[in-house]
Every structure is written in C-alpha cells, then in structure tokens.
Image 1 (cartoon, rainbow over the protein chains, first blue to last red):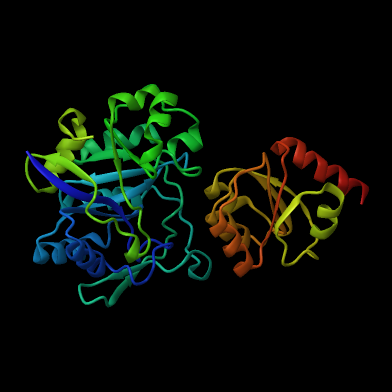
Image 2 (cartoon, chains in turn green, orange):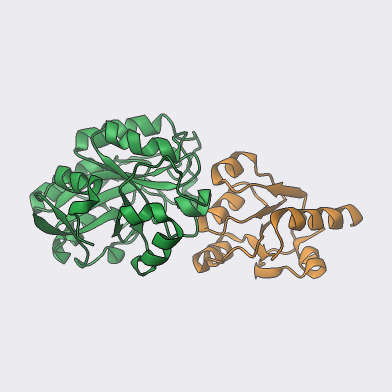
Length: 243
Length: 111
C-alpha cells in the first residue's frame, strides 16, 4: 500500500472564479514543484481543461485525476473523480446537456478559458459553468459510478453550496463512502452532528482558485498504486485509507 | 422607497451601500442562485440567505436595488469587496425571510 500526498480539488481558469494564471499547465507545474503525488483538476461542471492537464501531468510524472465539481439541482457541490480522460469527457458531455442554458457574463462572473499546454487560450466556454444542473445530489453518486469513477460531497462544512448548508442533512439514501472537509479541524463536530459521516473517510483539499492556494504535500491517503483508478478505488473503500 | 430610506426606517445593517439612492421596485425571495438568475428583476429588494460572492454577481446581472441578507446570514468578506466593486447594495436583517419581506412590503405600501 502506498501513501500518496494529494490535493483533489483544484480549479483552473475554466472556472469563472478561477484565476487566469491558474492554467492547467501551471497547476500541474505547481503540483510538481510542491511534490504532490496526486492532484485532481475539478472545474465547475466541466472537464474541458483536463486533456491538456493530463498531457502535462504525464510529462511531469504527476498523477492527475480528471474530475469536475458538479453543481446539483439543489446547488450542492459534489466532486466527481473519473478514472480516465475519456470517461471525464463523457461525463462532461452528459453534464453539459443538463446545465441551465445561461450565458456567462465574463465581467460579472469571470472568464472561462480553455488552454493548451503553452497556456494559450484555445477556446472560451460560453455557458455559465457555476449554474445548477438537473442532476440531483442523490443521483450524482450512482452517476459517477456508472462512469467508473467516484463522487464525494464537497466541503461539507462550508456555509454555502454544501450538502449540509443546502439540504440541512445527509439524505438517508446516501451511498457515498468519502467526503471532503474544507476545515478538517471541524471533523469531529460534523461527525457527531451527522452520524452518517462516522463511517466515511474524510479528506481535505485546497479548493484552490489561485495557484498559490494549492496544498503543500501534507495530506496523505493510501492506495494500491499511484494511479487515478487506485485512488478512486481507495475512496470507495474508506477502511483501507489512513485517517 | 429608496435603499437609504429602507435602512433609515428598519435599522438593517448596511454592509455595502454605494448607491443608496436606488429606488426599490418590489420584493423578491429565492435562495437558489440559478432560479434568481432567470427570475430576479430590476430594482428588486432581494431578501435571501445567500451570503456568497455569486449572489452579488447575480444581483448585478439582474440589476437589483439591494440584497437583504436575512436571518442574520453570516457575512463573507469577499462578498463585501465584490459588492463594492460591482456597486451592489447589501444590507443585513436579523429577522426571518418572511418577516423581513413583509416589513419592506408594508413600508412600500405606506411610502
């Protein structure tokens, strides 16, 4: 079993709120410099910068999980981690068909830039990516599984856009086995308030919208090997993860 | 009734009031951003608990007069900065959404 340093929630310049310096190549470069073993690129409702991130990550030897941060119909954020670029792009297409068709206003929300490995803008996403999709919170988890991935409720301790802020409880039909905390020091408070979380693995990520906010390699999880598939498998079976 | 008059009459805490002269045209209630984006209207006093940065962007998009954070919704400092930059009035009420909205409604009827 390997111990891998991770940061599985990072936004690029494709997210309207993501800094324009946070290009996929810069993010991977930063992860390499910091010595992170595994990162995930998780833009709001899109994986369209994952192809270039994967290309750069392969060159640097950083393990990149192609991901997205889904906005459910209840406006809860859910991390969707995919086993491959191909599956991430399939999910991207699936989600794109189910997002509210609202045009982005770059001056209000920010630009949504698709980059190549030289940081050149090769595309602009016109649909506002932070909008809700028609996918419900409960549907998100089997959806991720159907693409061979895994879904985790994002920043459950955040006062907006988390399952707890927006629903007020963990739905009793939940199946997820791992979840994300923004502030891991509040873990016990949340586990006692929401007992479902006691049987789940908690991870903590940067949710970085700026390069400098990407985590140092201080958080670790255990996986069979250093690969997207192995990390996804580990997050499905929290018993083999290190607290 | 203007936003300045609203603050004067209710004592709502001004978190950012950069265009207090804005006239309030009506009251709007919703706590899901994607619905607000399509249904919010110009001049609205938007009574909500949505205290985050995107609320400010949506208020700007729909040209609302003021965001009225109710239930004493916790303030996000990034939101205030954004409100200043985008010239969006934001005030805070400790009352629930219905009571806050009713209070504004009655003031508008008597204005």
